[in-house]
Length: 217
Ligand SMILES: [Fe+2]
Ligand SMILES: [Fe+2]
Image (cartoon, rainbow, N blue to C red; front, top):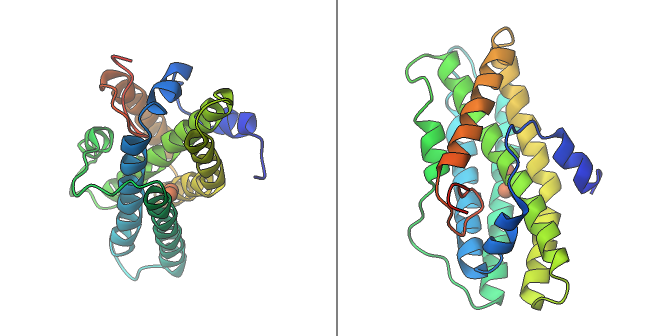
């Protein structure tokens, strides 16, 4: 990894930091955590593919297609890795999955407003990536702290650490795409989204999933 964990964490602009206890609790339920994670990778791949055709007007620029097809390919590869990891440990992928955190963020997107709607969709994607990075780091550090824990937990720590650099890249890519779309509104829009995200993650309930809330932790 290019940067240390501490550097990655310091660069994330999230207004709320997840307490350490979140990772220890999540690691108590590896099957649910991995299943949730696999579904999130699938949704990330689908979202990147879906954004390709959302350019608001005129010809879709090459840089847009290039960035989103790369992200879709990487997220599909993450899904491949996580699902193989699950199979290796005798876990199977559920048919259904809920993501109340992403649902609450998507509910705030300004619909039918061209560039503003698209920028909002990109901010939501950037926040999901940033919060996922924070949680991957917490899980990787948490698994190291449990150094006499089961080998599955140690292996999971390695998996989260391996995926981190790619997810940091996605966070930067979505934020850059949003900034380029509406440069003048970027600072105020992004700060507004960061505040909303901080409220949502603290208001929502805990469950063994990467993007779970911390209200009743
Ligand atoms: Fe991913
Ligand atoms: Fe990602």
